[in-house]
Amino acid sequence: MTRIPQLRRHQSQRVTVYWPVIFVVLLAGIAVLTFTQQNRQQMLDVPLGPTLPAFGEQTVLLTPTSVVAGAVPIGSELTATPDDSLAEENLQNPPLPVGTPLCDGPRQLILLVIGTDQMAGYDKGLADAIRIVRIDFVTPSVAVLAFPRDLWITLPGLEGRGNLESYFGHVTLADGTVLQGDYSRINVAYFYGNLYDMPGGGQTLMAQTIYSNFGIPTENYIVMNMKIFEDAIDAIGGIDIEAPKDLNDYQKGWFFKKGWQHLDGQDALRYARIRHTDNDFGRIERQTQVMLAVRNKIIQPQTLADLTLVIGDSLDDMLTDLTMSKINSLICLVPQIQPEHIRTYTITEEMVTSIYTSKGAAVLLPNYNAISSVIYEFLYGAMY
Image 1 (cartoon, one colour):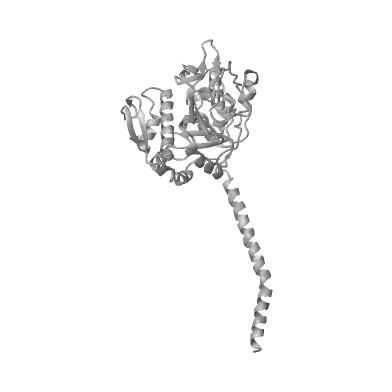
Image 2 (cartoon, helix red, strand yellow):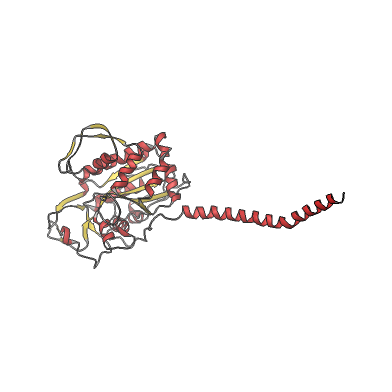
């Protein structure tokens, strides 16, 4: 009878001895869990690649010449309403949508997207496709601005790094003015940024080139090579495209018949790159077709369910400074964007002058007054 109290006493002593240890272990577990959650969030907010540095000065200040009365932005209300008296200020400081953003995203994201002409890697090659994408997380809506790759403009930051005229030559205007110095095609900005190992690489020089010439500051970038493009199209099961006419690129041996057709990754890439059947402006239209076809495919329920896996597989071979938090927000936003809230803008043939360089290269001289109106429409969702 005396043993039972002794046993109880020993058990009580064990509890008395070990409860501080148990309490410490519980606290440690909570601390580890809290740290893990904080660490996870920090990991989600870490850029996946080198970030874009601060932009320098603009070499060209674009000012629209007129305002179209009654122009109304698509999507959400903006914090600033552009007018003639604030033209330069509005262009250099794009407005932010007013309201609460969806999907835990920023109110607005301005993204540089580059498609290179490389099958693998990112250290060489030219920018085969150049787009600025403005994403409104409040409405939501998307605006896409396309740049022709043959625009003849200045490339900032290349002083003393080589003679750009050695390849393309120089341009002489009708009045005898010679455009010399750091002029070249816009698509070589990516190449030279990598060739000269400039800070941030080719994507940074491209972003700085667009800002210094057209005043559009970009926050993040995505660079895709041709192999990633092919694989991504195949991963979503291909896309459906309606060719507006028979397309025959004799130099490449590529042919697409007029009408609807289903394209796998390889054919989608060829469709987006075909050029010798018309010109670069026709190719921009076809690239826009491909972009919208991808959007139409990924919002289908069977594709949307696998979208995270598709993007996850592509990220290993994609070059970007987006964070996983922003990528998750974009994945969440895509199915909520209505077709009428996707707008595409292009620097058209009427906004440039075709001319040949001293070495016979065909290039496009920009008409900045005309282009500034397109940029205003892109930034504000209304024509100015």
